[in-house]
Each structure stands twice: as C-alpha cells, then as structure tokens.
Amino acid sequence: MREIKFRAWSIDNEVMYQPGDEYGTTTDLDCVRYFSEGQNVILLQFTGLTDSEGTDLYDGDVVVDNNGRGFIEYVDDCAAFRVNYFGNTHAKWFYDYLTRELKTLLKIGNIHQQPELLEQSS
Image (cartoon, rainbow, N blue to C red; front, side, top):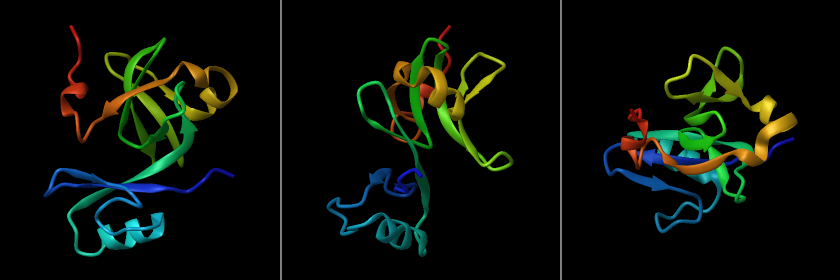
C-alpha cells in the first residue's frame, strides 16, 4: 500500500500549499478539505514513489531520465500514474518504474510553479 498524501496549487494566489505549512493545514485530509471547499485550487496526489534523490513525486511534477523530460500525470481511465514525455509518442507507466528504472527519475520542478518546463526544447 502506498502512502496517501496531497498538496494543493492555488490558482488564484499561485502558491503551492502542503500539509503543515504556514496556511494552517496540519494533515493531508485537512489540506484536501480546506482547499476543496470554495477554493480555486488543483489538488495534487502523491504517486507513492520518490525520485533518485528521495524527493516525493506528485501529479504535475516535471522529471527527467534516460527517456528525456516529461511530467507526471494521473490517467483516470487506467487508474494509474505515468510520465508523459515531451516530444515522444509514448508514455511510461509507473509500474514500469517499480520493476525497472525508478532510480533514474529526477524531479526538476512542477508544471504549476515552473510552467516554462512544459516548453519543449528544440
């Protein structure tokens, strides 16, 4: 079983809220409640995995590895997280990382705080 954690991106304030931060949320459930009730936010769920440096990986994080640069997304139809690579026609599902290449991922930011990371390099 993976640990269930959330953080929230405030669209209005352009701030990433996490449990235990200065905004008064103390648990992940508080974070979900506080920021889902009348707030203009995007809730981001923990994938259950960490990158090669031990940093938690969330939906919306931008990562690099041997396949290039991509962002983590949750796919409702499959009920799974994957890395969607820029400029490639494939995506890599997280169960692939669990079995083979997890330690090659490195988080370099997220699509909300660093939207420029979404731009493809030429």
